[in-house]
Length: 374
Image 1 (tube, rainbow, N blue to C red):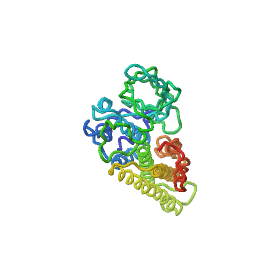
Image 2 (cartoon, one colour):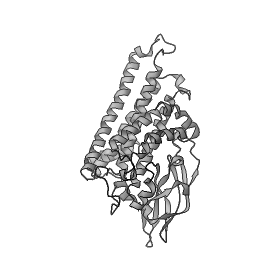
Image 3 (spheres, helix red, strand yellow):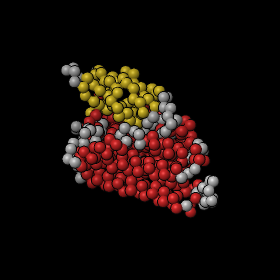
Image 4 (cartoon, helix red, strand yellow):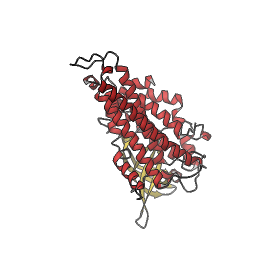
C-alpha cells in the first residue's frame, strides 16, 4: 500500500491509475476477487471485497473508486450466458468498467446487434478489458427496452475529456461505440441485471453471491469512502509531530482542546459510518445465503445508509483538512487530494446523500422508494 500511496499524485497527473499500481494490484490478486472460481477467480464475499476496496482507497482514493466500478462490472458480467462469461473471465483476472447511463442505441442484425453511442464518466476505462454499457433498443411497435451490452475495450474509442478538479486519477473519460457488433449472448436486460435476475440464470449463481448490482456498488462505495477517510486520518497523524498553531502560543497542535475534539469527531464519524455499512453488508449476505432478494424497502434502506456513511466520511475528511493549516494546499501534501476527491465522489448521482436519504425516508413512512435503481 505505501507504493500505491506514493503513486497517488502520479494518478492525478496522468488522469488515470498508473500502470505500476495496476501491476501491483494484479499481482496481489485483487482483480480476481469477483471472478467465479470455475474461471480461476477468488469469488470473495462482499464483505471481503469491501475490506480490500477500503484499504486501497486509503492508499489512493482514485484507485479505490475505480475498484468499486471494476468489481461491480465483473459482478454484472457474471450474469451473462456462460459463453460470454468464458470470454470475459477465462484469464482469471479482469477489469470491467461500467457505463450505467442508457446513452447507447441498439439495432438488431443477424446474430446480434449493432451498438452506437457515447458514455461519459466511464471510470477506469483506460485500464479496463471490457465495458458494460447501457443502451436502448427500439422495438418495431415503437416501444423501447433497456439493455446492458458487454463490449471489449479494444472495440471502443476513448475521448480524453476527463479534466476535473476532483477524482482526476479515476480516468472517468468518455467511451464511444461506432456501429460495434454485439453478439446476442453479450446482451442482458437492464432491470434484470441490476437485481441479479437474468431470466434463465445461465451462470447457475453460486449460493451467497446474489447481491444485486446497485446494493453491491453502494456497499463498495461506502467502504471506499470510509477507507479514504481512514487514510486521511493516518496522514493527519503523520504530520502532527512538531506542528504548532501559527501566530499563537500553541507550539503543539495536539494539546489544543478544539483540535482534540475535532479529531475525535472525525474518528467517530468514520466508525459510525463503518457500523452502518457493516449492517448493510450483513443484511445483503443474509439474503444472498438464503437465496433471497432484499425487498424494495430494504434496498432503499441500503441506498440511504451507504450514502449517509459516505457523507460521514466526507465530513470526517473536511474536519481533518480544516485542521491541517495552509501548507495542506501544496499538491505534495496528499490530504488536499483526499479532500478534493471525497467532495467529488459524494457528488455522484448514485452516491449523493440527498436523493438516497429521500428514498430511505419514503419507505420509512410507508411510501414506494420513488426509483427503480435499487
